[in-house]
Image (cartoon, rainbow, N blue to C red; front, side):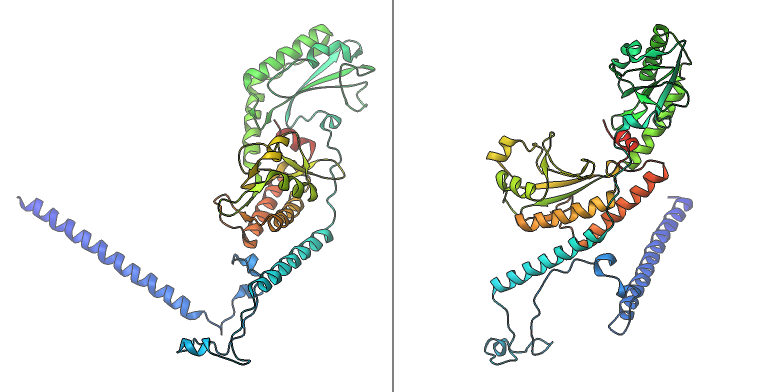
Length: 406
């Protein structure tokens, strides 16, 4: 072994020892800071968050309990002194049925207070229109091609275009003069139009419109223009495809759906007939997709839904003869006019149903959801709403319904 090799070995050992000593010193320093921090907190010290409710500080939910009278805060040295104690100073545990009844009454009071607070909020104003067809072309989310007929034409002249099927929703509009409003064209639309536009949605939940789809759209518009006849400028398919990809990425970041799960404990299940009765009593109505929907009175829009915890849909036969371990409340944030208020309503409905069905509200990992977690979820929804509005997508609007459909 040469002197160089020996020197390298000694240097390596010294480096390892130095690292070990450094880590040990760092660990001692961290432990000392932790101990000092705990010594600094006590009954005589007031924290800045003391005025904030525990649910907003991230603490656990305080369950309803009964106060217990105790003779002393210290534990007795002789357990027999407690067992044989008599008189007013003896500890007293109310019977279990009384504890359960009082706890249930407190829970009912809590739900009633939440319900009253929710009703005191201003009513969510329904959107101006939920009919996207009545809103006219939307160049920000659609590829729009203008056709200018040589002479006014009827809707029947573009029937081949209206009946075409592409990978993304296609709409046709016409107007009788440049100052007139756009009118959605159908095969039976009356009147003649001097301007016509074809509109292809650039993105939805199935993804962005590809360059091939946009090229097919350009060919379709060209064929209709030749048949009318009408002047038109074909779209740049590559540029529109790039615009579609950008729009799809934005929507993917804002596509938030919130789920609250109700589960029975252990191997218990909820009979389908009882579930249907409880759901309908809570205001849900059976939907066409195997879920129960809660509809907004003013518009008929779905605010939130109730689906099976299992993958099976809620069909009439399944509810009549089956059961399920739980249900999932689902809020589709972009498609709801007032997502935060809808979440407050859904949360209250979930709590009530949990109490009625003797189930537990849990997260995706089947851990109980406390009030602090629900506050955090509400904040997430508000953040999503703010981001949607920043990108000029009003939740529940015709634009949002188009982009977050499919």
